[in-house]
Image 1 (cartoon, rainbow, N blue to C red):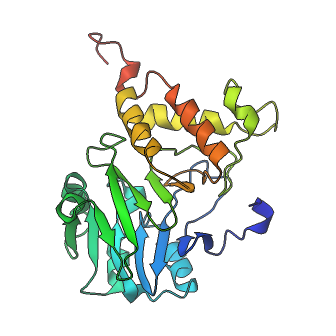
Image 2 (image 1 turned 180 degrees about the vertical axis):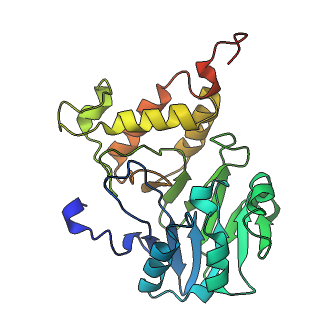
Length: 273
């Protein structure tokens, strides 16, 4: 996909029944990506977004032809306000007694502060999976402390799309929905400006994000290990760009495995922070 083919003012279908419904601002430097999955009229929404983005996200949802009342689950892969801030607005417009909020128990403790209206469902209580009426299944894989205790990723078994939450996220000085990582990125020395494209370095943005957001090198590597067990078509992070080819995914994984001194590991043991 080339950026000139995409209309960021509209929803974008990234796989069968999966829609990016986010807000695009090429100058923002940081992007949040909510995703809608629709299967035979039944819908779930993953990481619905901030309060300020509510009108954009809901308008795009309705433009897909989805009746908000058919959204059966709001899935939150952790509890930050950029994911959860618009929960009260979502609940009010969906207006369905069937709506449930789905997350890990460690997240639901905090998600209750956004909403006391909808029933909270814990992924560990439903066997770490959710099935649509058609049988299409979403699997939930724990990635603890990447970056919260209850963090997890979501895998659509039909399309093999992985919704990776903060894993593979990035700061975006030069953003498009589809990643601009190229083969030369495999062996580069990340810098502010890429010597090949003369654009801000995508690997540098990814490294900076993970070093700051992830709690530790161990937590990041554990999350990568969980991802590497899966057969993935597209990695769809909650921040940054889609990793939509095997080459891009391989480069991103390899570069992230190289990271040292992530999170608290930046501080020597015994020397106060």
